[in-house]
Length: 315
Ligand SMILES: *[C@@H]1O[C@H](CO)[C@@H](O)[C@H](O)[C@H]1NC(C)=O
Image (cartoon, rainbow, N blue to C red; front, side, top):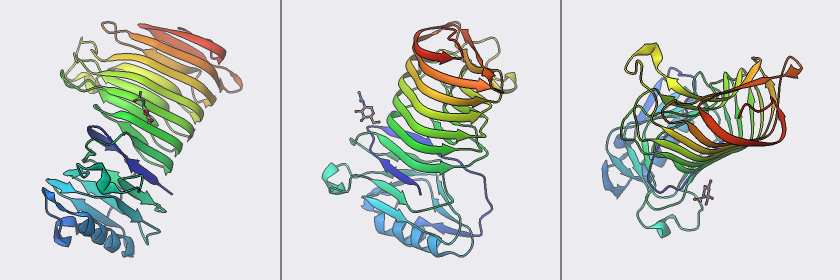
């Protein structure tokens, strides 16, 4: 079951990616009457497109083209007959007036749906508060959840991730001017067989982006690289040779994370030499490798540690 509720202050670029599946049927919301003008209520058109996709005996895609689509409180309910891909090229807009959502407590809700993939798009939730991803099982060839620039007040809880690349903040800092990531919480989650657990990743390029107030806690991991900060992301050494990341990472607390690591080094902090990580906290970690204690490594980082720590803290 996947339950997604969205309440946000700004734009969210928010992507959940799954294995790419070939689809047989495509449902464009425009052909169900949605208008990409940001003013006409597109809710019924989206629900009709969903009903068609949900009843389709073959895998299907719901396509949301470029443009702005006004959506009121919307429930995409399962169970559905086959796999559904939601491809968003445009922007979904919440009503400006919060009361238009009634007392539903959500804006967009996927419920009792398995095998749904949501790609791309922008969710513009106006003046509402935060995004919640709760009780979702995510199996993918990419990040289970990828958190982009300008994400605020995101709560992820009871996530089961794997296979996949874990939960990633980033890649950030590709642009010089970039909005930051603030107040991201991941709690009560399990990672199994994923490449990474919780990861923060930034390009080795100048940027004024940032990550602050993030809290992975109460997680169980059975993964290759459980805890990583990598500020030297530069695939194929293109576009960033001999540069350093300008993204400021601060006030990130890793608390009560346990499990097994696929490598002897379970905690790797490789922060930017020009913009070191600050205020990083480690509290109560127990990560082992083949029944032995793991190690941690620190570069350009400041912070504190407390509680029982396996690996020993390098902070
Ligand atoms: C942080 O986000 C949570 C939702 O995850 C929200 O309840 C809380 O109020 C936010 N904190 C601040 C200081 O904005």
